[in-house]
Length: 321
Figure 1: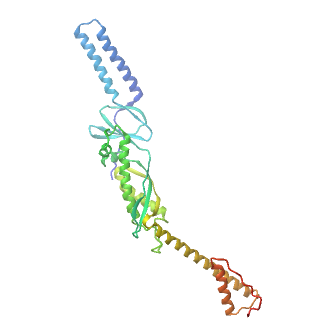
Figure 2 (figure 1 turned 180 degrees about the horizontal axis):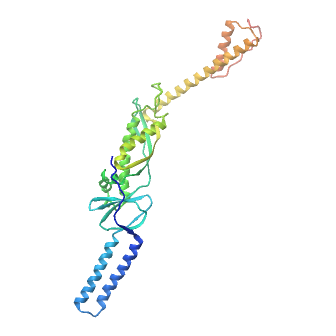
Figure 3 (figure 1 turned 90 degrees about the vertical axis):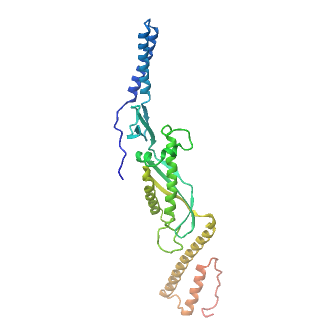
């Protein structure tokens, strides 16, 4: 898309120099008016002098309307009778033509901590998901003219657009919040909460945070670029099952954890039994037939895999009794 934003190239002057000139003109106009009244001149000459003094004073009022001040991280959109004349970003105190209408915007980074919303994941499970977003204005032309930010800023307030930068930025915050909600719902619906049901090595919301966050940023960029907004960072900061299924899913996760632990225990127990049998055989400590080996394996597995401590039984006889 063509970038329509450009730097303001109109006439600008140092604000402090123009302030000094304007103060001098104000003093001069006052002196002329006072001189016209106190001098003993005819009415015509007095009227001309006083009129000239008021004319000079009118010029000072015209000059007063042209002063602008910008802090770091701010910009002004310059308008001349409805026509875009560029974006002014020079920091400091300046003077521009008073007929130039300026609308101030903030280019500083802003943070959005969205409240968790309820959505359905890829498998249809209701989940609660929230995001944190860092954004800032990048293209002032799109921000002011590609979306209806002026109407949004004026709704619900008596202040005019351009006189309160907070109202304008609040309008952008509402726009970002709405688009972020839509992008989050879109991304959350593409993936499952976890892969317990499918059993496949797929991307999930719980285990693939970096990949999901990257796709979330791409979706947000697509939606917010029309307003000239740049996404600095977007991350999912809250993820949980919805309350109505949270208890059931917790029991399922606990069951999965128990099964995984049991598998690990059995795997370790089998290796230990094999090691014991190999050690007994290699060092010829005792010669066991298949029945004795089976009994030994059974006893060892019970001891190693059981939840409770084993109660030993001492055999005081022979191996055959």
